Length: 269
Image: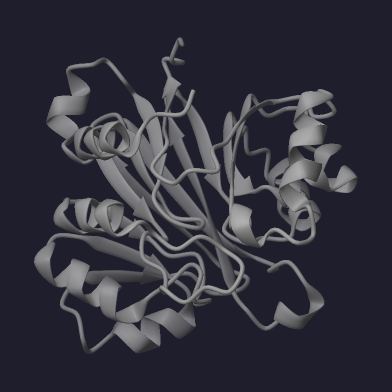
């Protein structure tokens, strides 16, 4: 179901206003606000993941200004940054957002941490290759972060951080641009039960990645090309796979930014 922009802005405001969202009984929800950035609501905790990107992206969708303004005006407990690429990260916007949210806790790789440290008074937890960082948000939510290979041989020097969020209502994994087979193999080895996977659409289109998705309940696909710049036909390929039910988990997605997904309890049309 695709909602008009005004409705999507309203839903995003509800998502950011945790107390208002709580009255609806929603325990896990997500809203995509740019290329790969999402706002998460997990049991009255608001979490931003890669919420601010650059405006001059070549192939991907930038944030709609109204959605970005709505997100920027909100408050969050955690800010999760996966890596430093411009379609996931904008240093100045992150700094401005953190400065107005003094209690915000940031997670980032070493490169981003070096850029931000000294310019922010917020707590920054650094995730390094070979190490993991665990953080207990409250009695309802635990976070486990770790480094995983970035997709593409040319990006092997990029430390991509993945975030595993565990609640009594289910567990959610944010992939960033992690290489699908490497990440899903890590999840299997570490016995991470994943109910909800927020990942690039290529986790669905690549057969070798699809094979590892079967234990997952729901995939929320992001990081699509701009529909007006999809010369490679990637969106059509993705939709063909979904239509033919070649992927086991339920797949949620929208080509329009601002879509709001209620994950637990599952929304009904």
